[in-house]
Length: 139
Image 1 (spheres, rainbow, N blue to C red):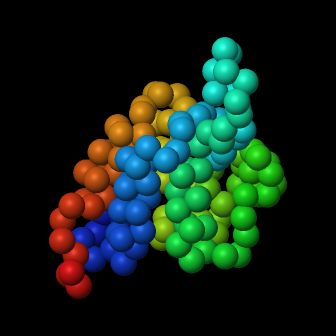
Image 2: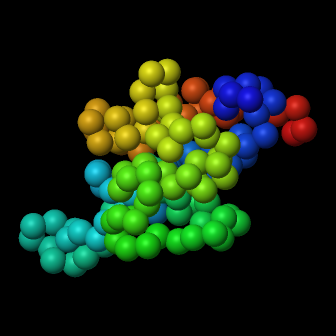
């Protein structure tokens, strides 16, 4: 069943991802699920930065997925690669790919890392692409 299907059973989980992107709790980064970086060249304070799929991973971990955690600061032991979802996370969301589309023909990695979309833009696109604001059959 496609995530665009009105009866897609994982829609609530994709909504949690969208809401986390909008929360302001995740500083945006590129290239890795999450990585520790200095706040700026002038401020040596370190903070975690997340790509949009790193946020999706954190949401899954905080909401019931317990089979693994972030292995290191870059997620480098992910068998699918540093910047895409772990297979377990993709399955938790019901995605068929470790780099799901956020818009027709545009993957999450491309939006976040190549097109430099903000989390707000990615969240808005998730709402449209996955029809998150349409009521589900069981709601």
